[in-house]
Amino acid sequence: MTDQILVDWDDNNALLWGHQPLLINHNLHRSPLFSRQALAELIEAYPREHYNLIQTGPRETRRVWREGDFGGLSGLQIIDAIDNGTLWLNLRNVTKVDRRYREVVQQLFSEINGHVPGFGAPEHTAGILISSPKAQVYYHADLPGQGLIQIMGSKRVYLYPTTPPFLTPEHLEDIALFGVEVDMPFESWYDRHAQVYDFKPGQMLHWPLNAPHRVENLDTVNISMTISYTDEQIRRLQMLNFTNGLLRHKFGYRAKSRAISGPSYFAKRVIQRALRNGAWLSKERTRRQSVDFKLDDTKIGSIVDLPKTADAA
Image (cartoon, rainbow, N blue to C red; front, side, top):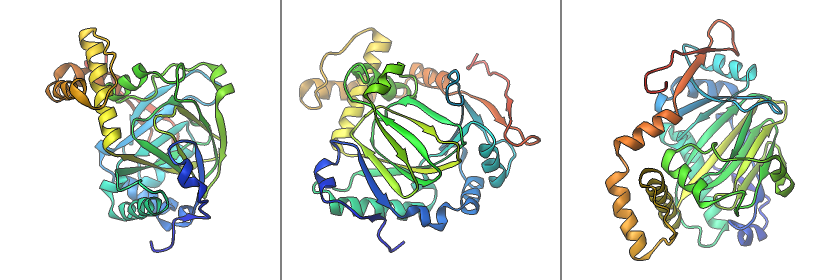
């Protein structure tokens, strides 16, 4: 696309970028790439290793977090199932899967770089989220830099401080080690310390690195796009969190240093390279990320439980 994606940019955003939550206007909600038909076609061609289909509990109910599979449904049937369930679909790495979306995201990052001095050209990717009217995303944090772009529907986003008890080094270590962001503990009183945004199409929300957040859909189907980016500092922090978590979980050693330079950091980098593909870690990740349902192809919006495998039992 040739039109500017970001509109009505406030010059103060450049000073606040990365330090405070920012609500920025965009025009991606007008793009035909995000129409129901275009997304249905994208879903039908999507590689299995690049999507997550999650069932959550409706708001104000017990926590539910299950991962599932499309089954034999068409793209439009999958969107209909999301319309009628409590599901959200994350089409991860869409910039690797489809050139059209990659070009859009490349333009977006080029515009950000033009507005924010020193932003540079970090490695980046994006995902498309399609979620049910009453679905939610539980309290969690992300390791890369993040932005959320609203395309269709409305949602409420809660952003929390990046300090204990809301976020601790152990939380980040577990995310880096196991790849599951939503196991972080949450207390209802945290909401008194949150910044809350009612999020509409045509808005993009960017927040400081690792800021915990949760999301509630406001009774409409939602389509959003996430952007993620990693620069050298973020890469080093991810490596540090991974290795500190590995030392704590596998060897019972709590590392005190969180330096991302110097002898301690480089020693941890050697450990990370040696152990990152170990059998223990692979088994732990599989246990936390098992697929246990598929979409029902006879009753759209319902799910069918899959038999438990030996690894998931």
